Image 1 (tube, rainbow, N blue to C red):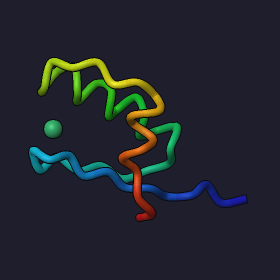
Image 2 (cartoon, rainbow, N blue to C red):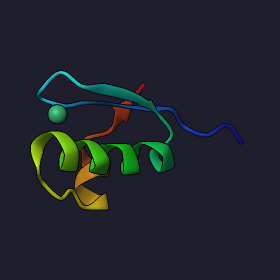
Image 3 (cartoon, rainbow, N blue to C red):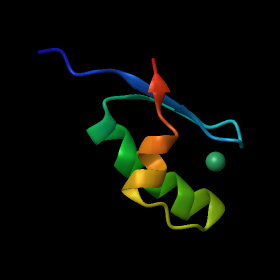
Image 4 (cartoon, helix red, strand yellow):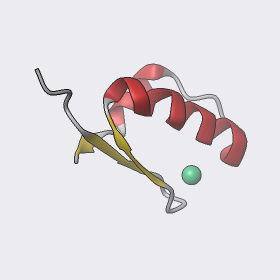
Amino acid sequence: MEPLLKQVTCECGWTAKGTEDELVPQIQKHGREVHGIEVTREQAVAQLVPA
Ligand SMILES: [Zn+2]
């Protein structure tokens, strides 16, 4: 089965594309390093749209 590709676009303009399992840690890292916020898995998943 093909992994579903998702995409995320942050309000700051940062974007990333990949599977949910790839993107969640990237979104959490981005939130921490760029915005100084902790992002839960649920919050990260909620930002994903089909790529
Ligand atoms: Zn951002």
